[in-house]
Amino acid sequence: LGRGTNIAINTGTALISRTGTSDDTSELGRRLRAIGSVALNKTLNRHWGARVAYERSLRFIEGFPDVFYADGVTGRLSGQFGRRFAVATQADYSTGKTLDMGADVSDQFFRGLQVQTRLTVALSRWWQLYAEHNYSENHLSAGALEALAPGIVPRRFSRGVRLGATLWSRRAH
Image 1 (tube, one colour):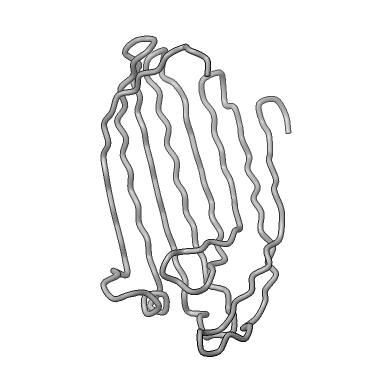
Image 2 (tube, rainbow, N blue to C red):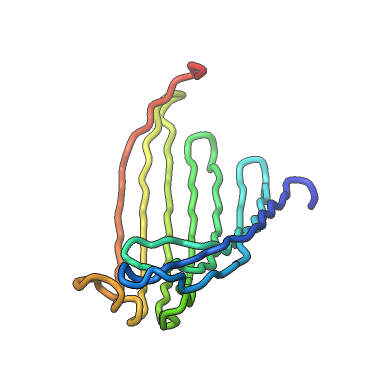
């Protein structure tokens, strides 16, 4: 696509089948679904890069009997300020709905947003310090909440800050 730009495309299919309960083990149905992803990477200059990606996938979420058919979008920007400072930020948004496998689960869906920003300061050739901020917001539909154990909150927000140091060596592995 030009100098410093590339695109990656992955495609495939998934076959999902589900049986009934322990009392009735007959198959509830089979579904064939298309899955895949496309990502565009761009080198903006010598020290900066950007990425945008779309993914359609199947997600198995603990606590749910059915698989979620999900769509997700990711954006990332990273680069350096001079020789000592680097920054990276990434945002991910996804949404999904359970596959109708014979039961009435069409009202079970989710939406999620995750954002992460990291600032790194190089102290020397071997040491660096970093500060990272994370934000997460997840929403479940009323139908999805009914399928879960009691006590799950319909809207979950979380924020966090992490500080750390990294030490590395030149030794080859």
